[in-house]
Amino acid sequence: MSLWVFGYGSLLWNPGFTPAQSVKACLHDYHRSFCMLSIHHRGSEEEPGLVLALDAAPGGRCTGMAFQVAPEEETKVLAELRERELISSAYFEQEVDLVTDGGDTLRALAYIIDPHHVQYCQYDLEKQAQMIASAVGGRGPNTEYLFNTAAHLTQLGIRDNDMAWLVDRVRALTAT
Image (cartoon, rainbow, N blue to C red; front, side, top):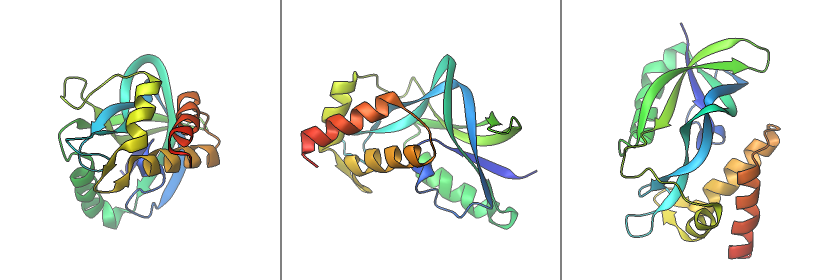
């Protein structure tokens, strides 16, 4: 059985490996949300940024990409993903069922936010925009994360109204 990984945020534009195959897919009962404080990659403890997470939402859906890992790379890729995604225990690793655009079901690994973790947050869009506009972390500015993710969603034909609003607002705040 192949290892598949679900990308819905930065994995869309920086999976960290070359997928053997990729397919657009949807995860039901979750949504993509800027609900995780980033204190390492896109912010700091003093000035946290925000990154996307899969947040439970009964009846919701998150469309992203399923990436198949080449069998000979599975051990290496899994170790690298865990180092990257589980840096602060805010995510937990879970196997989920995705539905592809073709109607097939795929079992994939996904990183889901722990709503009881100290980095879990729920802010209105204006506060999200203010935080994203100014935060910088070890992997660069939070704005880069937002703009890259939004651009890749657009390229894939995935509409995310909140993301589009955030891009416009953050551009206005940063005049970029």
